[in-house]
Length: 109
Length: 112
Image 1 (cartoon, each protein chain N blue to C red):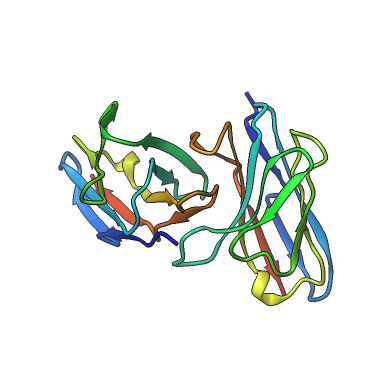
Image 2 (tube, rainbow over the protein chains, first blue to last red):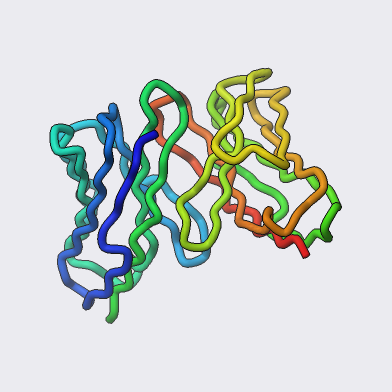
């Protein structure tokens, strides 16, 4: 089973700061998911990436397959970015994902 | 676009009761999943399905059953509810093994 570690567990920052959330995993993968869970509980898929970098608005996700590490960056953070960010990786050869416990991000105005 | 629809949003059950959590998707996705989320824990896979008529166990299947008679619907059945099943349940779908996940809004279940 793939083990997933996210850091930090909690992060509080001022509006406008550059945010970095990290995800490390133990077994080589084909793709990694970044998810956002709103304070109300809903979960939205942000990115699925297998190499390099993806950008969507102020969110950037990077992955280093050799180092088994991914980062999620938020530029010009805003209070509406406050949420729990979760990474998930597949277990080798099957449809099951292992989820990290999430990073709770709070952006203060 | 409805996406993934879960019902109910909230439910309180007494120990020993049973219920079915409904999940429907309108994106013609083959892959569907049921997860539970406990406080401070990552999502845990209960059951999944890769197509109509095909289901398989995830990490925590005990106390649950599923069926997949159509591509659209993937209900989760709780028999003999126990306090340990108090959790938030999420249904999700995906177009394929490596596809992006689409989640329902969740069902908050309390068993007392």
